[in-house]
Length: 417
Image (cartoon, rainbow, N blue to C red; front, side, top):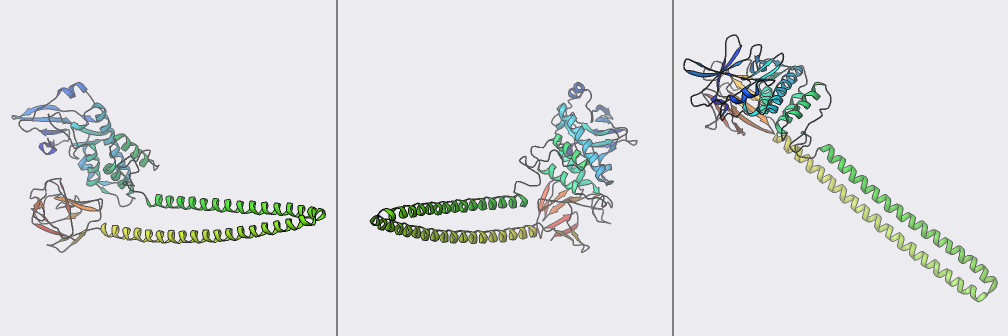
């Protein structure tokens, strides 16, 4: 059963919130009777008035969340509301009734003591989940221009990308943002940082490249050191052999002239061998230097090519993610799509772009939602409907937008640029 099956209202003094039940809806009141009381959850009383069934919820001292969202939202106020809703959701989750909560801003309440979420004991009812409500607070709020709203984007990223979603982790995130300290838990789609989005950060790529460069330099240094040690060892060995040979020659000359001649020939042969070894070693060294120079040149060319490709990718991505505009054909106004949610309707103060003097337009007719480099039209339950290229937009369903698309809000026409 969808949330649209519930028709709700609140009495004049704001003390009782009422949900009208449609015929055929089956109540299951046993669960709330067993639970008795759950912190942050409002249980109902089933009543019949003029032959019609209703669920009455006592909400004295509370304000509807949708009314709170219409006020200017500061960081302190926003985090306080999100935290109260999360704490109520944790209590409902512990009681095993989180899926039976009505999670619309119109069906949730805020008081000095915390948030109040309405339990719906109707067979087959399943709420959209508290994550939906937490995001709705952001989508419906207007944030103070005097503060840096980066914290709101951090919350949006967590709510959109964290899988599996954990209210406890989200509560820890809010606590970290309240104290301006790094949050204890910020997970992305696979348990990694939510800022990564499953890709390697530029800083990590630089770090890996520097690490590889350091390893290559260490390898070359080790090879050069080994070659130098071998050269010195060979020179020391040759020097030692020459010294011993010279000593032997002196001794041999003093003893035998014939043996001295043989020793001289051996010395010359040793020198020739040493020269040949030195020549070969010099050639090998020159070849090694040429090889390293060629490798360094190839690596530099590969690096430049990779940087050029990366720059081209960034350029393409920036071009791809350039903000869209809406051209209002009646007025000629161009409306830049610069925020996560652009609200359009006829109620000034409730929307970002107000269409005045047209009774066919609803108070908040539709939203343009920007997410992941794309834009989507979301009809907000308008009376006279919304269309994209002649196709009707079902309420609260996202329809992708592309350049050149025609959007009809009742009889008001917009073009996506």
